[in-house]
Image (tube, rainbow, N blue to C red; front, side, top):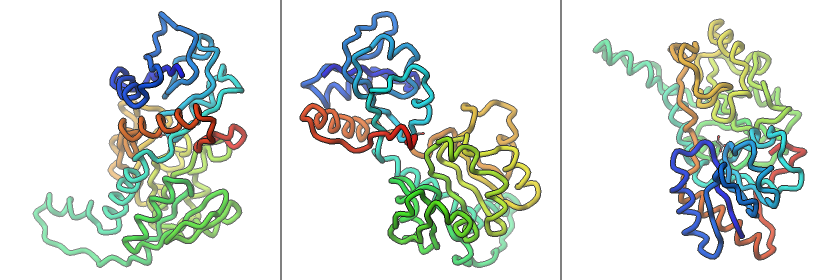
Length: 309
Ligand code: GLV
């Protein structure tokens, strides 16, 4: 197989090519070169691929995405209909996302932000004990990421609810199906978004949803910025409907200087790092799938274009 690595995002594309080549010595891996397209690649490994990749590589049959979310790929106007899209499945991302969620969950439920402020004033002042039952974590999305987040929170005895299309059971959590959003929201204090971005989920983090959460709710968005209606978040923070938010993803990335989120004390901003694709695990997963494809075996992680993930 000839494999082309074409990402406009990674700062170290040569290292990725070297790692892929080392993992797949029986195949040829090369870096996409816009000035010298070769037109013979069978597969591409991509994240935000260059617009002309498909015109210059007409033989591509598989597109391995370096991330779990394929929303941006599906927006590419020239994306050929017959290419099989393959998303990353976990690859070390789920545990990072679980850590990220736990960090903010614990910071809020144990008042650690307030204790930091008290230290700044040299004040020794114990706050109220935690009432764990009042801190139900509601995870939107029951895929690999959502399930891992749910399990990790449940392991610390937080009540956990998971809302997903299928309503599939997740160990340690109460599952809610597509039509049970209202019941799910009514229980939730810390709302965690781990949904794929699709036409159905765009803008789902809106006032209509925030208004149904338990009082004093907190939002953690680690999926996509376009899930969130930013003005609704700000309005709900101002009205006291929400106590705060941890945001890792934004409609416009990098978040522009001067954006209100940067300076709002109720909002924690991180630069899309909640779940990074770690090179060694990612390469291992893609190499395994390439070999399976060559052997004619089925692989997992194939994107259903109708479902949009
Ligand atoms: C990251 O954003 C991913 O989609 O994996």
